Image (cartoon, rainbow, N blue to C red):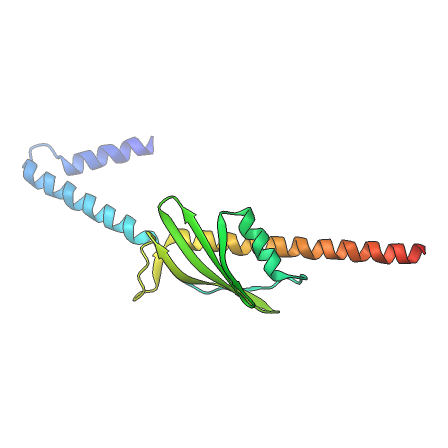
Length: 164
C-alpha cells in the first residue's frame, strides 16, 4: 500500500499536470543519475585487517587447507606462516594471504579482478569483506574441529591406559 503511494507521489512530482514536459524530463533524469551514483558508492568498503585469534590445534595449515576445500577457495602457495589463497566466482577473482602465528591469524589483500579495487583510497567491492569473513570463520571452525579430534584421541589414549 505504501509503495503505491510512493509511486503516485513520484509520478505527480516528475510529471505534474499543466507543466512543461521538458522540465519534468530533466527532473527525472537528475533523479535517476543521483540514485545510480548513490547505489554505486554504497558497494565499496574499506579494506581492514582484522586479527582473529588462532585456535589451538596441531596443524593450523591443515585447518586452512580443509577450510579452503570446504568453500570455493584454492591454495596457490603455502609457506610457514603464510598461505596464499585464490577465489574465483563468476567473473571475479581474488587473491589473499593468510598470515598466522601462535596467537593470531589475519587475511591480507593481494590482488583481484573485477572487484573495483582502488589502491589510493583502499576501497574494494563489498563482496571482498563477505568472502574473507566467511574464509576466516571456516578456518576457525576447522581448526576447532581439529582441536576437538585431538582432544578425543587423547581421551581415548588415557582411557585405554587406565584400563591396562
